[in-house]
Image (cartoon, rainbow over all chains, first blue to last red):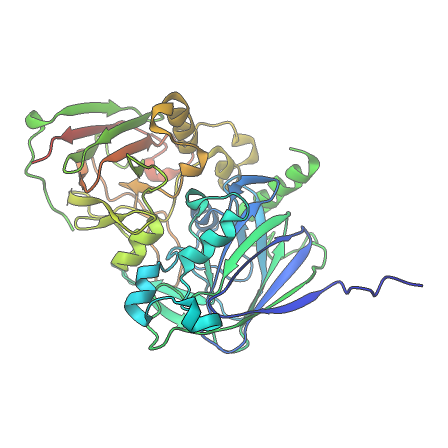
Length: 242
Length: 214
């Protein structure tokens, strides 16, 4: 009897609003995230599961690609010069990585305090605590919390450098990450820290995990800039044993 | 915002010249003031700050950016910790704009930015690694080396979302001055970068001056 169909090669789930999750995604897999209702935010961090001190580095990601916004074609770099994941598809166009998380006090000041007993699954979780819970599962501490991605949130700037949350995703906007090395993904769906919504945004996000197509020589992310070619070269050397 | 300091160098408690490629580490007490002087212009002083009593609380670029809802640092910028507390405040600045998005150079990011075969060239993160290895008394480890400030660097972000490495707005003798809100470890790598035109491929010295509390 065949066992090949016992479990399928892909997996679809929905991350509830104000929730957190972590998972070890293998090289060659892709993760498609879809904002089901519009106005979601997905905060995300990456670590090397076999060398947890290696983590997502927002400054290197931005300066290596001369960009402030992240979208299709961009690679998400570790502090060791390697590519954790590349953005192979994106309907939204601008994901930010400098505003970090809300703390408990921000949520309290805007929408009220977190109280599980009365709020149950609608509790008003904050991004900082959400990340701490997941990080602690891997013996990581708050020192290991780096500047994170805030997917589905566009933060733009004027000439003086003043920032605002200028756009959020619409229902069914999606972004797809292809993993270029084994990666511990830590994520939460708490509101963007600059959100001024009248109510705590309760926004679910769909996650689809499936096998990615092989990376070919004409790959858009690899060829976006010379820097990405070198980043992928570093990954190739890493998998060669360096 | 350009603002000159009223403090006189003759009243300083300590003065130290830090050559390019070297580091500076020292604790200053709450209320004390530290000035970093760009002696020859267009240098980058890659700087980190920590709570001296618990360095797991440290300078946080994201908390600072979020709280001031602005990207660049200058006079009036309150630098926040990762617990969103006040750490140290910029009280004078004759340069006018400092970067906290671009991070530090490392041997690893140099391979991506410039050439894989430049992996052994000196970089800021190596200076910090040496600093924390030579000064175990501060209790710092690799995970404490986070997202820094580049004093004197100009890294403008365009409204369209591009990141530029523009010519410096600094010049010989320009400085930035900060007053500590808590007992603070100051850790500086005076950037050794030889591959970036923004210092004219010529990294130079900075001076670090400390005054006692007013």
